[in-house]
Length: 179
Image 1: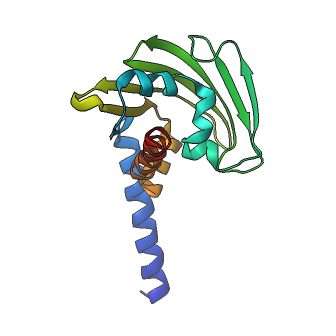
Image 2 (image 1 turned 45 degrees about the vertical axis):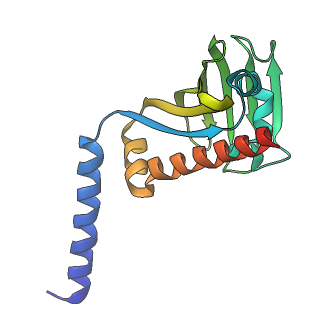
């Protein structure tokens, strides 16, 4: 057996292992991270409940300053709709709707990704008042994955990347609110 055959065999084995791992992994995924902000819970909640404020802290929104945005309804209320479209493939095209609000506690969202890939997810930002006027902010995404998304999660280590992006966004939020 030649060296080229051995290389092809190894590559083939790696591909088979990845395909099996994707097939056996859960359809469900969840990504969550949190941060403590030195502001009272009402101040933090009253900032994060408005989707239009995400332009000041959300890493994905901030990637393309020329993103085209559409807003429908009253921001900060259930049913508010936000759509984005960008020529930048990292931003793509999608929609986000506020699906639930619990004052000073939680904002729930439904997301629909259209480009560069299609998918849906649920998300929330939760706020919890701590002592000394601090607030713990938790941001989470969860949903279902098809086979290709499972494979992408494994190959690209998406869970780690997305968690890092969420944490970057929360760090931006902390900076904005603590100024």
